Structure formats: structure tokens, C-alpha cells
Image 1: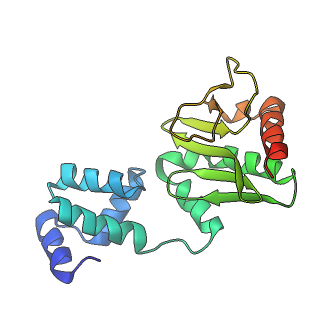
Image 2 (image 1 turned 90 degrees about the vertical axis):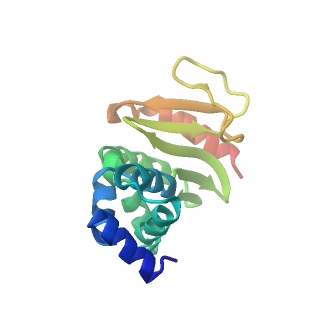
Length: 181
């Protein structure tokens, strides 16, 4: 937790309050602690300790209370353009069954069935990446082999436009959902 002395020191050094810095971070699309800390250190020449203290005030101070708020928080800043695509995809995935869970954290959207992941959505710059858990399915030009960052994910598709949410993608996700139990 940031002490009053930390907050006063940061204001003296930057001329900005934590609320000001939060608005600036949001405008830049920064949501992860590490992104905010790096930005504060680079942009305002803050020490690591002061940058971390302010980052925690920014990210935890108004922490979302439910999944809907987490979705809103995830799809702000640089990720905002992908929110309509996510909403379309989520609506189609929820039709798979009542046991679909869409769990959002600061870095990804997890698609689960009975607590078993069948898909993972991340936004990376201008792209929406969808990881799919479908062992044994062939690798294609579009459905590439996944990297090793998420060991459960076997395939990855990279979307550059909302129009790429097509029947084939929904079929792949449906197959992954059907295998999850």
C-alpha cells in the first residue's frame, strides 16, 4: 500500500496526483502493473518503489467487483476496438450450453466448461488471439500450432478483423467445448 509520504513525493516529482496518473495510464491503454510501472519509471523518472506504489493505487484502488466490470476494464484503452468482436464471440459461445464460463483477468479471457479451459482470448496490439484446446486436431494455415506459453492450448488463431469470427472458428471452439468436461 502506498504511504502518504510516497504519494506526496510522487506529486512533488511529477506534479500529478494518482488520479491524474490513472487517467494518463488509461489513455495509453496501460492496465497491467508491469506496464504501468515501466511507463512511470520511463516517463516520470520515478524510482521502482514509487512507480510500484502508484501502480498499485491505479490498478487496485478501483478494482472491479464482478466479471462484467472485469470485461469492461479489460476492453478499455488499446483493447477497446475489440470489445464488439468479443461480445459477438461471447454470445455465440454461451449458446454452447449453460456450463460455459467466461472468466476475465488482467491479461486474458478464459473460456471454461465445468472449470476446464477450452479456449483463451488475448489482445496483442491490433490482433485478437484465440487459443484453443483441441488435442489431435490438424494444424492449418489459419489454426496454427500454439506456442508454449499456455501448455493446455494446442492451436492459435490470430484475428485482425471482427469479420474473421466465422462459422469455422465457432466450430473449432464448439469442438473444444465438447471435449472439455
